[in-house]
Image (tube, rainbow, N blue to C red):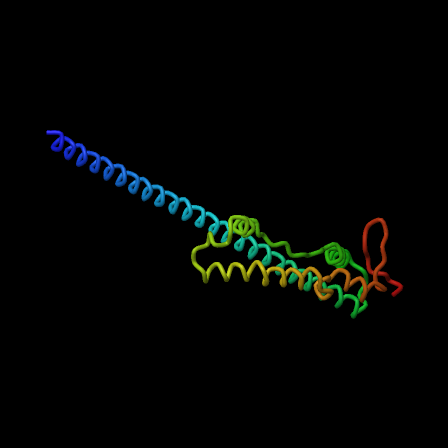
Length: 181
């Protein structure tokens, strides 16, 4: 009898152990699935943020381009005025003031890329996409900002003051074309 009871208890214990092991494996699988889901949500959030930053940058750069074009148009009008030695008029003075008061610089948005770096760029699972984003923020954006913000060719106001400064005068109303020049 004792041997028969021991065999039953042994079978029961093995069954209990198997149930516990299966329960643990199911719990681990659910936990892994949940962690994977959280990582995917974080990746999507980062990628949407980076996309929105790039869209914002594109809009800002296009705004600057439109501004440069407007300034170039004003430049042409003022230079034409100077070349033809026309009388000083209000429009020309307004154009001149707009030209000399306008300053442009490039500021690019990278808050979501910085967040991705803090979390580890491996949060972006697509290796090709991760490399392209790293190249954009690590090389292309800094080079673009350096060219535009540091290059004298883009410092239009300073260039204009230097090249045409002899033709301008200043008073309490602002900048005007000096009739004596």
